[in-house]
Image (cartoon, rainbow, N blue to C red; front, top):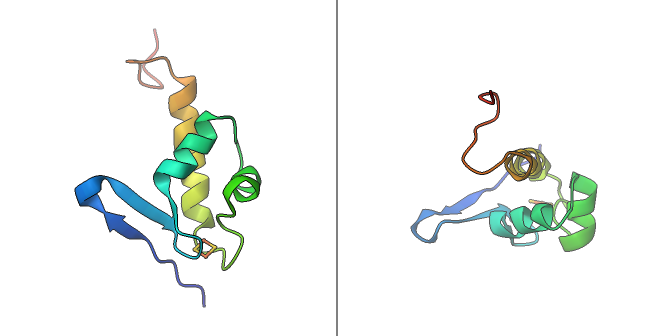
Length: 82
Ligand code: FES
């Protein structure tokens, strides 16, 4: 049985996504902004998701969300373009 541990430090707006490696959501978002576009590339860059694998769904979701934000012009929500 895999156990996913996600610690949220809402008081500083920081979330540890990969507890095995201590990787935060900020690190993953930053890697996506720098060009990483898959779980594999994130793992290669910072080692997240390469131990128990419990964080992989969360990392995948962060990559999708961050890529979508990167591709959407500022101030425009996806699906509401004219
Ligand atoms: S939480 Fe175990 S590899 Fe990320």
